[in-house]
Image 1 (cartoon, one colour):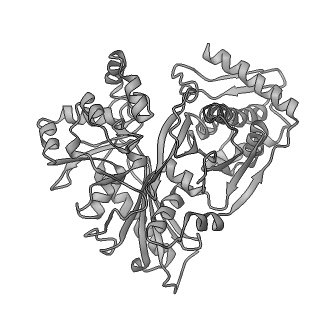
Image 2 (image 1 turned 120 degrees about the vertical axis):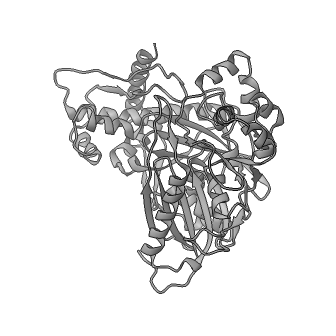
Image 3 (image 1 turned 180 degrees about the horizontal axis):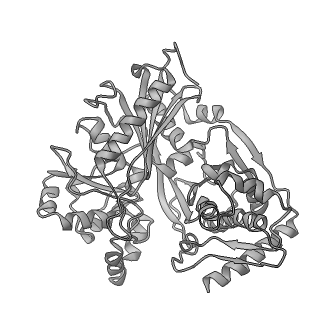
Length: 500
């Protein structure tokens, strides 16, 4: 795994996630030299509130980078560029001189601004936000979190107008820290998740900022994805002068890491939940079916857009079978248990354990297991749980197909549950298209590394990246079309009962 004795240039990807940070070193042939991770604390001051300590985030970055460099056996001077990918909507405001945060980071999962969001909806503002940003008004996004922090800190709004304090999502914060305050920047993928960026112009929108009572002066500069954002300075654990050449939100990074460069190409990341992102090219498609419109990246002066749909529960249903029901002792056991029966025996599991996400957006929905008989076993329930994950992805892709006006021809997959062959085989059957798993499944980290490598010339072009990207396994539909239709109809009936 190491690169002992090598002096060839490498790219460092910093993948700053919700529960921890990963660092990955990649060479010019797309070989992963090392990967290291470090978790950090989650803070829950009240029900529905989720916070991170900014210094703990940065310490997790330091620890994971130091470990990755040591594991790879490379010299830090070989790092040609750094790419940063991040949990997207998490919001920080810090002092422009000292770097001290005004408040803990408010995490994307946090719901404290729900009442303010309802207020904006009652004022009839949802359409203007949707038209300009592609998003719905929801506590998920950064805008209302920014407003909340400014409201809580006396004099903060005035300080923001004078740029004495600065706002950023995690990418901006890390770039600022790694450059000793020289760079206050973000990219279009992160900016598009704030409720403040006009998707068409890729610039901060003064009207939206005024509606949220947010000064535009303290927002970071939005820059393209094929330029250098700054250089390391004074970080301590990295030499000065390394270009920071990529900032990109995690789901967009995974789309790039899966080389989904053409309109109609899509990826699904199976994690605790599941995220489907579909490249729509230079066209902004405003969904009629509950998808979000977002910016994927801006390269060569051209913005690539995407549709995004998420389901709240994917791998989490496996965790529930383990921790809640005790059907399995470890998550890895579910595949063997589910494979011990030929099918789900008529059982349908709708895993709406925390409501339904796209395309239904029903937070009040609750999960169900239907079709139980005296002959139902733990194996049937396990298999139905995996099928429930696949059916949710099917519904998202069907909605995207309607929005796109064209079929999705294949689906690339990554994330923890993408290691489950049974799940992916059923996913292919129920979608009726090929499902492709790459050789490197750390696609979020790889996407950031690829963008950084492109910016400094380590990778000559997007076409060159496509040539070296390799699939590990392709799952093609095997199920009879009539049986697939029958299975989908059974799912629709169970889903209708949950949504009623």
